[in-house]
Length: 433
Image (cartoon, rainbow, N blue to C red; front, side, top):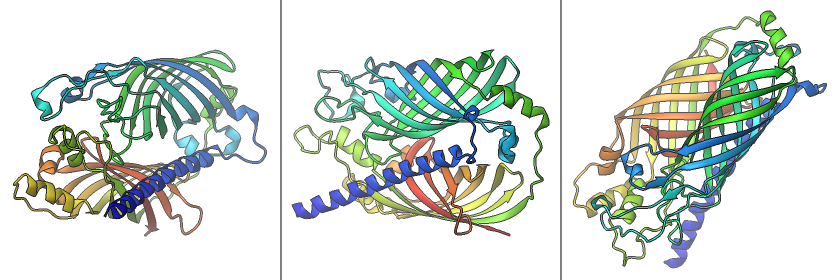
């Protein structure tokens, strides 16, 4: 029996590792796609930035406020930037106002962040410990899309979106970080957004002031998964040898005509998740004498999905539509067992069905996919009634392969009220009508 449990646990951990490797490989593909240039590439396409950010780990709700005792942190980021030049004849770049892409590394110092649960009736059987838990420092590798909103010879205003992976030095464990509910795995998903104002004081140099939001979480691939959210202000020094050429190009941008059209999009997803139910019962509903009390070992469950969408590509960079989503959760039996132990009589089904509005923002072979759906059928027990919503969100990044009729591969995170439900690897086939 022990060998069977060990084999099952090893298999689940291997699945988790494979999914994380797929996520990292996708990020590298995105970077290669964005960074690829013609053989006669010019050095002037490339720039660099060095930034420092003073931030604060913020509490997203009243629950976190109870155990986040101190949140100030500091981070340094180094970025290699690439901008399209006029001679590239890039229609997508023209559509987005000649954006800049960056490949960066950020190191976040969380030494001062302090986490501690004090005695509270909300904690059930949990007994507070006599020390404060660290959050741990984080190394993040990411890709950033900077889109300009205004450019002049001196001033530049832009917003940015970033995605990548983070690596945490300290995670939740029973030995010295038992109150770190933010991060439960050494590898996490990195997301950031910002608004930026740059002052170009020389032809190739600028300083930039920014307000930024940085998020790390593991997408429910492990527990805990509250995720850390940092809000801060940063200052950066930029080397931008391409800026003058970009300015000269904007008045003369010419875009090829784009053919609008309908297309069908069929997708299949293979995902994974851990259960919030398992986390809650081991944290607050298990006596300290039990070996599973506040455990850091959680079972990982496979999850499957299908999508069938009708999309309208009404612009080179945008498409929108409507689709039907089907989900199959192998964890439904476990949820039913927990509800029966609590003497709850509820319907349970591994199948869920939803109707969703879909939108994609395209850039070359890349696409940022967003959807907002409403469940038509879902029976996932008591916790779903309390902590889920009748609606769900999906966000993902997809890459269209240059073969197999533009088959796309991507990673999606499905969530309820922005709280991750599962992470999935998705294959999709668009069929133009």
